[in-house]
Image (tube, rainbow, N blue to C red; front, side, top):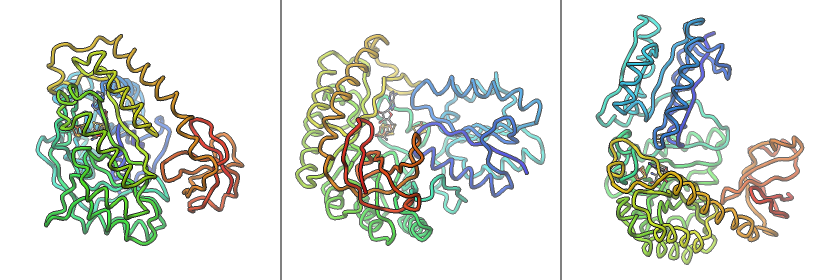
Length: 434
Ligand code: SAH
Ligand code: SF4
Ligand code: F3S
């Protein structure tokens, strides 16, 4: 039997696309392997949101050249990175032995393209720059048995000035609500308990006829068998009252909400084209906390955006102190070809960017244990994921706010939702008892 490996970079949307790639590839008679040396097909599903991914990708493709010479391995590269002209040219010039280059809008043609390569031994370049249609019904091989991601919309219209995503993923396109709900019902029938709704801007979901993201939340929560509903990423500018109300009225919706800040400075937020100020952001968080007292937040922050002054950065630290985020995904600003911010003057020197990153990290680290105290003594509902990596006698799971919880228990609890009392905090995980 022919063997394959899909290597995924980037966000959950890409992971979900890779599940579809695996589904399509297995339908064509390949079997998954982790060992590159025995692969007949290797697919890279790439990300280009920050620059370090490029080096990693081309390093790996270089490594594969020898294996290809020995085995005739088919090499395919797809995803966000290949939507960029300079990457297409680099592959053409230096990596001509790559068999298939596909993009975000041609994922659905993968089977066709692969078949032609197998039969005709051709090199195929199948990247298009128009918004791909919303394609339903692709086979899918889920990577988890109890948790599933469901993409509800593709693309992004926001054009934050630092971000490459709108250029490589195209404009916003929402899936039909019927298709989304049918997919989730089927997942529930197959034993899935937790659903994450995915999109670059989920709260601008548009199901037509005034059917909005909040309507979708109500309908997803009605599905029997689904116990936990999460979503990423919402945009603060679209966090309307109906969405807050939907969270409040549906206990299945996770109480950790991702509220991407990016910067705490109104000045920088304007240059980022984020469409909210520091004050509006803080007010929104405060309103949500008032409506839903047990809510907590996670966020994304970029440090070192062009023209960011010490004062601007202090505003970011100020918001972090005020909000007490449960989790912060921190990024050093990375210049992306074709974006508005890349052309801005006063790019911040690497050294300052790194110093600010460290300062933000120190502040965040100092607050984690303090933040964890609120869980001690509480009884948390958790979905049991499996055994602990370090100790086979211990189980792990995640609570509603996505904290890792470790506890003693028998393996037949895996995949079930149980209640655990939290006894200790260990910074990056909590300990508990059933
Ligand atoms: N649509 C989502 C985020 C998608 S990208 C949202 O708006 O929240 C994930 C994160 O990567 C972003 O939130 C941002 O913090 C970070 N990011 C995007 N472009 C970046 C860049 N050029 N440099 C550094 N970080 C970046
Ligand atoms: Fe990028 Fe902004 Fe769209 Fe998020 S909302 S994907 S950060 S342009
Ligand atoms: Fe990366 Fe594309 Fe996601 S650029 S972050 S994989 S949408």
